[in-house]
Amino acid sequence: QVQVVESGGGLVQAGGSLRLSCAASGSIFSFIVMGWYRQAPGKQRELVATITRGGSTNYADSVKGRFTISRDNAKNTVYLQMNSLKPEDTAVYYCNGGSTITSGTRGSTWGQGTQVTVSS
Image 1 (tube, one colour):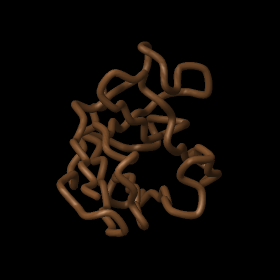
Image 2 (spheres, helix red, strand yellow):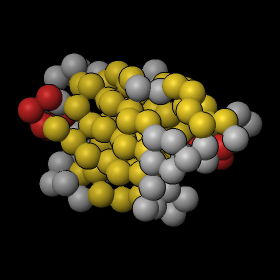
Image 3 (spheres, rainbow, N blue to C red):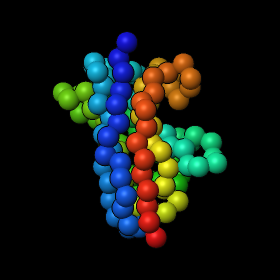
């Protein structure tokens, strides 16, 4: 079973940028949909962005125009470029891979998460 591992989190000031990486242990074509989710303290996990095997993308309204999801098939890696970061972006960010049915559910593949902290 293909697993995913996130990296790239850290502490950044408001207005700054970070790039998260999600590396798969096998081919990312194993997943029809790959995405990034986040969970802030005391809140439910929420969708940030997804990208399909065909390259179609989808974003949460709160990150549109600031975040960009992309994939490098040769490196089996999905990225999340985060610009103009805000304190409300502070959360643990999780990489996810699944089918069109399982994407984002407990039945899909999750990474261990990477912490992003944005200071004001």
